[in-house]
Length: 430
Image 1 (cartoon, rainbow, N blue to C red):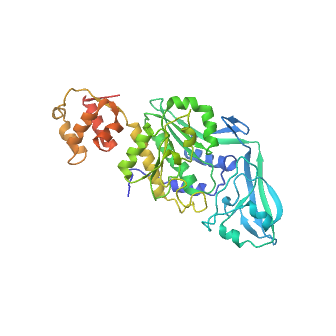
Image 2: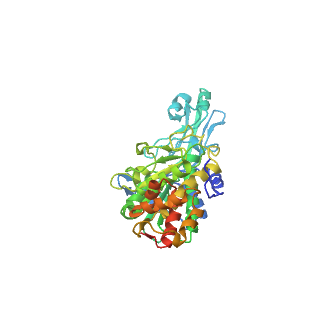
Image 3: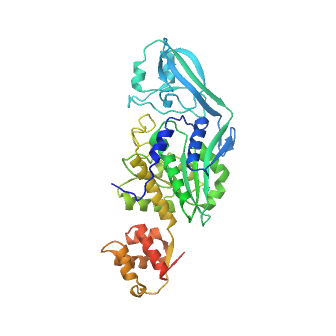
């Protein structure tokens, strides 16, 4: 079992608090969620973009809000009730209040025959329609008759909202953390990403100094990243050295890696190094299986170096996009696994300098007090050979990640050795 050197005990509680909120790509549920995270990280700024705003090939849709929805039988008993699960209503359903026969109602119902006890998650953002989602068991139990169908919702001009946190560092180059806050009561596919990102933001805010600057985004998926890129793309292309879409980081079944489109960026190398070193066995996916906002960040013409470190990847587990992706599916331990992997990847990036051995031939370590002290601080029985391997591969051309790979050694251990050699004038850091 992987044990990370740090914890954040609040993450599961945050997920519990946020789970009941009915979120979508716009509306009060989204704003309530952003305000919750703003309470945890007060510098977070909540931005508003008006309905009708054009962003590349897209247009911000009308704002959707919902108060209530149900299907009731002729006696008034609610058979399907939004108040029991906000997944019961198809996202962005337009308002309706009518009586229908079961036969006429069937085309507006969505269920999962393969998982008969689960409620599916279904949306229709860009075409006006309405519908209900229910388990297959509920659906087959419906009896012929008349049903009162009510969706008390509004679709009208309003705003799309997102959260933005910009943290300056010593260098203007940025690391991007992007997560989405637009799904209703789904735990791994929704809340795990924002709560882990919130924990990472708190940690970064608490650092005395940061080498890199950070751009941390809480967005509605797809339309949010498209809108954000339409406003900041050129700046992000100049500044972003690595980025992570944070999603599906809450369960305890697996670790997964989705590369950038090019597959060889600094983010790719840092993520791979961390997963290989600390996890060992993980699922490596092709970029062709992408499904979140890396679609936008890595698209041709944008080409940001963005990857995803996940636990169980979206669309690979049976609970995906249905009511079984609940608070029982994630855990504090699972969330800390996602948090640990991402935090370690960031720490690797922060320490990923290029070192140049400035002494010709082999330096005499003994006279610098390094031969013994390094041995006491590195891997038992391997310390001196590793020191000499780090010396041999640090030529001012390879960065620390590549040196560690060449040495077949942990990145952070090579960083400690390199820093000690720098302090003694053997290395020059660039």
